[in-house]
Length: 78
Image 1 (tube, rainbow, N blue to C red):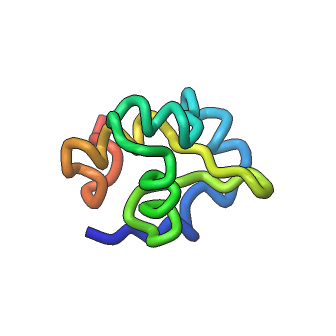
Image 2 (spheres, helix red, strand yellow):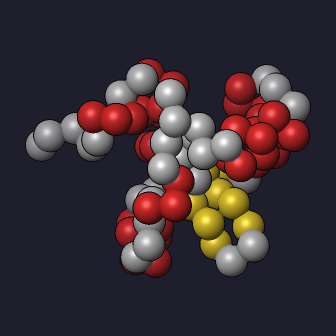
């Protein structure tokens, strides 16, 4: 599954309102994989990412949807 990370969160306010962000190190610890693998998945646009200048951050809600396979369906309907 590929994910177009380039179109995520162009509005800075949506990043602030989206909840907590993870670093690559935190995501690697969560998945129990090397940090380099997280960066590789990021470069290949296989996981959702928020770009903050030169830094990558990972929205917890987007990662949870990715983990459950719900990423392509979008946010849950209210």
